[in-house]
Image (cartoon, rainbow over the protein chains, first blue to last red):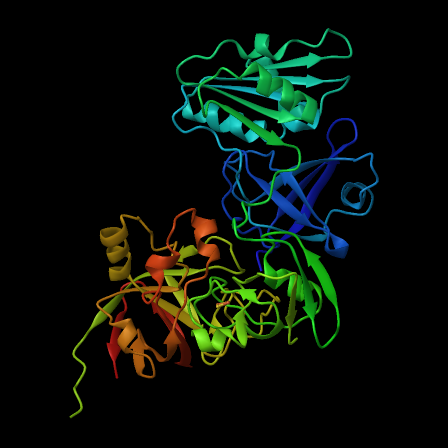
Amino acid sequence: MKHVQTVVREAEPAGPGVRRLTLMDPDGWPLPKAKPGAHIDLHLPGGLTRAYSLCGDPAQADRYVVAVKREGDGRGGSAFVHDALAVGDALGVSLPRCTFPLAPDAAEHVFVAGGIGVTPFLPMAMAAERAGTPWRLHLLHRDAPPLPDTLAPLAESGRAVLHDTARTPRPALSALLGPAAPGRHAYCCGPAGMIADFEAATADWPAGAAHVEHFVPPPLLPDPEARPFTLVLARSGREAALPAGAPLLPAIRALGGAVEASCEGGICGACRVRWLEGPPLHRDRVLSPAERERDVMACVAGCAGPRLVLDL
Amino acid sequence: MDVTPTWLGVVTHLHVTPRAFLPMRGMDAIELVEGRGIVGDRYMIGTEQGFYSDKPEDGRQVTLFEEEALECIRRDHNITMLPEEHRRNVTTRGVPLNHLVGRRFRLGGCLLEATRLSFPCKHIEEILEKPVFDPMVHRSGLNCRILEGGTVRVGDAVRPV
Ligand code: FES
């Protein structure tokens, strides 16, 4: 599956309530490429996955750096990263995905971050700096900022401005952003309230010039036909509720079902499974209409009904 | 009538990677181990790490790809794909890979048996951020078993037996 094996090489505090992890291939091999602004899922015990923006230097191809803030709501992901994960531990991660890229044709970037929402902007700022594109980062934080060591040189250069809202009045985003201008792109990552303010402040900007990233990035766009359904493995009786567009193979495996896969694109035939109830949404290119009455290629399939029961 | 094969090809690039999804690394020479795979590569039998897409299998000890297919993908789809991006171990020129299924041939001093055509992996589009899955269907190279191992170098001949 989309599972990149890494090892925790460094783990250290990086600002209040923040733990920074440096993840590397077990042999230090280069990792799959990540665009500035990309995030990865950490595959945590118990089937938990949590998405975090990469916050390291994108020029360092052999590591993924993430900064994990302890979540107050008791969800297990950040607590595990803070309390249980140790240097030397193995950790599986997803391939990087970028839903928050730098606009390639921008003449100028303005980044606005709230607290730990600064993470995607660090590699974006480094990339903009190397590309020679002017940029500015405004970080709104309370008391000590996250990732102080990474931010310090950026702040010294004058291009990153830290606004401690515990000491100074919270600045208006419209004042930080300035007016819309040809080639000027604005980006915001932070809590929901800040994103709402940002969207209001950029409401009259040209289409496509204002970009937002929520703390928890949205999943890849599901197929418009996709709908949630219950996956059932008939032989074990185990089942799971799948959200719309969720890929089937990892869900089958999480339930203990054994299914081969090779192309994961519906052309090789490796993941053929017999279905008992559905009907499945077939998206493969190998099965004939008659075969589809009985079998399904799990790697690309969905379900048209409320339950997909597989002979596994 | 049996037609005597007349082709003669050459190894233009060699690549390995130790695990699924990691970038391929260009090599001047690689070591083929009879019945197992390439030293340091993810398809080496006996190094299973539990990843399905790149799981070692008997018929996929070494994989080959035609440099000509890269040119086709550029010509027909206007997509530039580099030799380190197709994720096969051996890039060849002048070898009709699709015609070799079920046959034996020499790769440098090694003897290979072609087991089946390769399939592209859908994840390659995510890794490369290029829409290459469809263009690669039916020209995604060849999977082979190693009958006689040894060192293969860039520039080595590929020829029928
Ligand atoms: S893995 Fe190839 S068709 Fe599903």
